[in-house]
Image 1: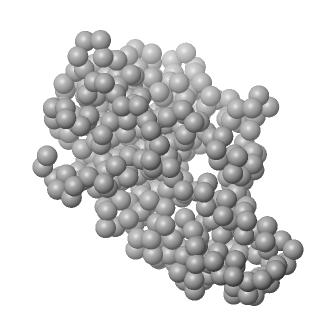
Image 2: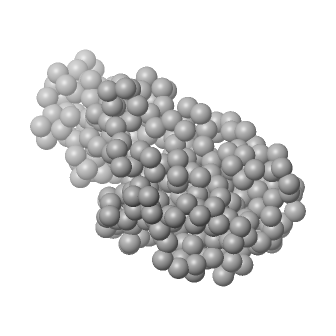
Amino acid sequence: MRPSSAPLLLLDTASLYFRAFYGVPESVRAADGTPVNAVRGLLDMVARLVTARRPARLVACWDDDWRPAFRVAAIPSYKAHRVAADGGEDVPAALVGQVPVIAEVLDALGVARIGAPGFEADDVIGTLTAREVARPVGQRAPVEIVTGDRDLFQLVDDAAGVRVLYTLRGIGELEVVDQARLVERYGVATGRGYAEMAVLRGDASDGLPGVPGIGEKTAVALLRRYGDLSGLLAAVSATSGSPQPSAVGCSRRATTWRWPLGWSTSRRTRLWRTCQTGYPLSRPTPTAWWRSPSAGVSRPASRGWSTRSAREHPGSAVRVTGRTAVPQVSGGPPGRPGRRPRRGQSPARQGRGLPSC
């Protein structure tokens, strides 16, 4: 396989369709009055991404479980404030019906949609990134992760060619996050450093407690002093009894009785925050091909879903770039734009397993 500078583009799909829902007016509706603002916004974003980034492969990573049991076991407060009365996720009523439509449209377009029972899209992204980085240098492609979730900054790695395209102001603007941006904005030099800083700081939006008395600046200062989180925890463990915050160089708002609890929480949160990169996902039997835009767009168009022009469809954008838009199975033939799946091979089935990217 020849080396290519065209990236593997990984979409944090739920993050993007939530952004699309809030960024596109609910007045965008189908002919029958059904709101399709999230559908429309997501498709517009994918079309722009494919046109601008020219990816060799494109994957819509999916939350098969928005609040995995193993993370709740580690931190019971994880996303607890988002649990609805029925135990599911609290999602706006106008968005609930659009999620299966988004899945249907992506499948109709032939875009690989990958999830795993018991895991979040973060874990799918972490796994696909790790597998791409592990490939031989001559076969490895850059990885670009599109998300509105800063937790995925932990995967940024200039040497491995991994960076994040972070959504700003709804869905219309992207910030390229590489290691230079992490230093400039957060004072940490690596993706791992960002994850360890976030563990200490906590994240109220996900119900994740940090260490009491430690904010972002103090966390960065402590990590610089002790090298990394392991070094900091070792320093805490080395102190006898219930250590004072000043023993490891922190005094802001921390109290003696809360300090040991805080460090215990930080250990558990570190387990939570790490993207799972080695868990098993089933692999698709057939090679997943990008299908002709005319065939892929016909079904959603027949439903009356709103679009501006043919050129703005993700399918049309890929036709312009002349590249495949889905991962290929290792050992299979190279992808060719416009090639249809063999008879009996459903795009929905093709997208559910884990290709060797």
